[in-house]
Image (tube, rainbow, N blue to C red; front, side, top):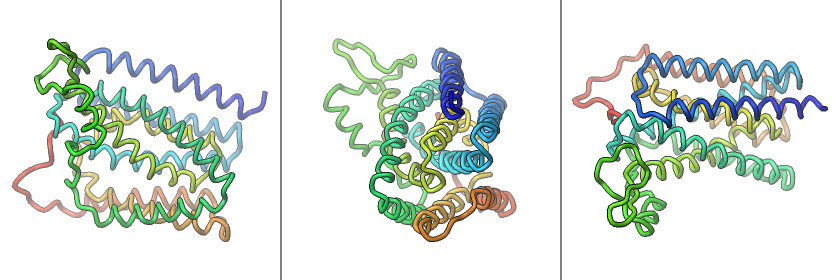
Length: 312
């Protein structure tokens, strides 16, 4: 059996076991995730991804390990910015904190399958039409510029077109529920929890369209791209609750992420002319993230009359 086949087996078994356990722990019982629990879960997922990265290096080589870690860090940092959008979505629909883990868990499951389709499609397209790498690079640069100029709070979850289509198919009940996605009141109604799940899923699809080209700029190896994405995505539930409690440490994260996207977009466009060592890319990405967090701590937050939205 080839090393890559062994790694696929290790990945599928590890991801399946951990994700099933995560569903039973979170979706099976409604509870609020504290900052301490979120910190422990985030640490656990990062350790698992790190061990898998080292195993990748042992089985597939040092450069593959660097590609995995670079892709993982990029996807995880992009996920941090996405989590702030999820905070706004939960606040908009007024979802209690104890039900938020359930929505995030099933949302992550959907994200894993969406990324599977998008990643394998993207890799196939690039291998068939090599010029698409320049298109993806251009998309990343445009996304970076949009992220730099976009103001916080511009999202309107109620204007989501998929949510409007859902409302035409099944009535959306606005009454509080006991954590169910559907209720029967003479006829079946979707609950605010299901409406929130729909918006989270469609938002994640948009995020994936931006983030997957960024990872493809690091590697076009389907194993590296997909495993790094999945390990970043499965830890989003705990990441969400951690970020919700320490938002001030990430005030300049959006600026840092936009610079990272700009870097990988330029790297993608120049890939046919200049080869950038994977270790250099990993160092650049980690350096930008570290500087954005340092600036968030050093530069004092201006006083505001109102704090950030409280998720639930």
